[in-house]
Length: 335
Image (cartoon, rainbow, N blue to C red):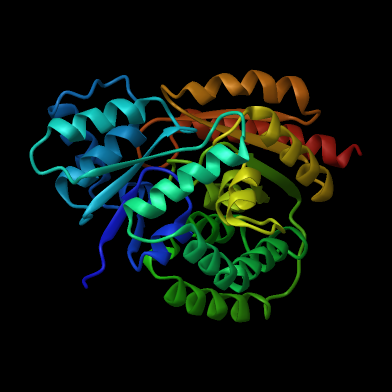
């Protein structure tokens, strides 16, 4: 039986897709890593998507309609952006769009509801939750190696913030093949562990969805700063000690309220001795409102960056980053 390519719009229990013998494809990664990302957005706008809508939604839609070779798509209708529901409806009326499966993360973090959703998704893909549990256990070694990579980022600086971002963000789908991904990760860790240890002048945390900017991490490194905590990318790697798939995705903070994110951020900021935080928000995204809560609850200098379309950071953003880094450097020097 030929393996299906299962696309999805945000991190979901990838173990279920793997248990079904199918290929997981995170459509966010397809969009943002493509040289045609701008064309995907333009295709969405040509089909009627408004200009003042999140580029991630338009990019995912455009990538599916133009190039992403997927047989079915899993769309999260609770626990992600509400615009995904409208995108789902768009796919349902557009010729050539693949069939849709829905999945929900219960906002109240109800374990029984989440288990029902997981069993429903398992059934839709022709597998069982029990088989997905076996996949969870099989992936523990790989996920522990991702923890090791994260440790090498903040403990010894042998892994850069940009490298940390690329590997952890890819753990949402493991590039479609966990075995190939693990071999690549093994080779990278072997090389990274031979690097000399170091300590960046400015230790930063990055909060929010992964940035749409292509050169943010390199720009910060060039200016003596390193991101030693990538909040959401770390969450994608599932860095938890847990006993079941349901527990694992209850601990995953992204789909739920901002206060679970705050708790995780506060612990990691203190543990990693972070000097300042960059909060990235996507233009036209409701999560931008969460900036109010982060600023109210976190006692740390915060710079809020807003991104729109894929590309390099612009002159205004560079100026704001330079000013923020100067502020942090002054605080570090003055104790």
